[in-house]
Length: 185
Length: 257
Image 1 (tube, rainbow over the protein chains, first blue to last red):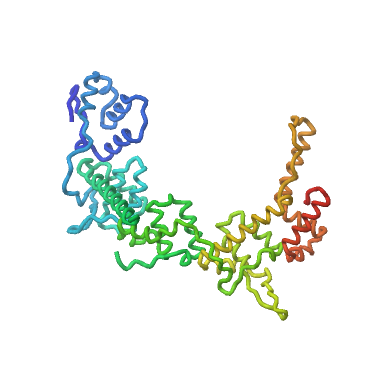
Image 2 (cartoon, rainbow over the protein chains, first blue to last red):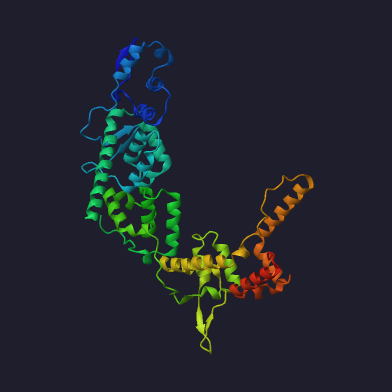
């Protein structure tokens, strides 16, 4: 967070919700803008600035905010196992057990990667409501309801799951490569 | 993971009906994606793609399963098998016109209709008193026979299908002039106006209508416009019919319509 012209400007993943974070990432990675300035103005708006806040910024202040951005966050060692939101309890894996991601989840993640709001979708896939069956968990409208709910969660806490997923994909690609090498020996 | 149902290890263990579903899956879902593999495994294990087993299987299991199904990336190979389940592949030069017309019709969507194509090609046979081979008449219920064929190993069906396609290509090449529309005279066409324009449009409409009803039109002419003779024509060898048509065209110097 940075204070400029009496306004707190969100600059760090720790201060963003998942919904805001995925919008920022979409603007950065998936949208084309004629000028870089336009891209940042759009990000400022997503993070709560209005037109007059932006108009009042000097050039230096504008670049000061951009310079303060930190979208990586510190690495969280322990993956949060549960989420409680709107009175519902969700868990990513069973207590005392290891994280398990089956093919059904991987297939959904593979499809979700092309979508704009990937982070909330990823959490909606990973976190199962404890009172729901597996079949109920995978129903599209349940997935969609979880996605909407999870957008309000703090981005940094749950971003560790995104890092975990990226790591898992990397490991599995290495595994595939190893297997291919074995096959050609 | 242990205790997974067995997977087929080659095309002989895949039925034609499963093969058609495989083609459908690869048309609907990007080949190689996880969703694609879930659908393929569900097909071979005869379970729903929503089955809980897919929650339990992990990525490394999928890689092992993909390797076990590596042979799927190649089409079935011709195997020379022309006899299966008490049925025999009828020599294609002995096909009757009725069979040929149906084969042509089903060949417009060959994969979808492979069961029907093979069901026309494979027939019962017997030896008569003179020890000649007699073929089952084409009066059986095609849908019922196609249903039987759907349960056959796909490589058997694929082999027969390929023999048909190769024969058909040669056949169409041999009788090329019968399958081609008469060539338009060369030279630059002057833009049509008024009555000429109406006449050209009329001609085009007639041609389109003839194309739509080409087999019916051919049969109508060959039977001397006598519908009661259609059955006799259907039971005449296709090769003979095309030889006669070819001769007629050659003698007339015009197209046979």
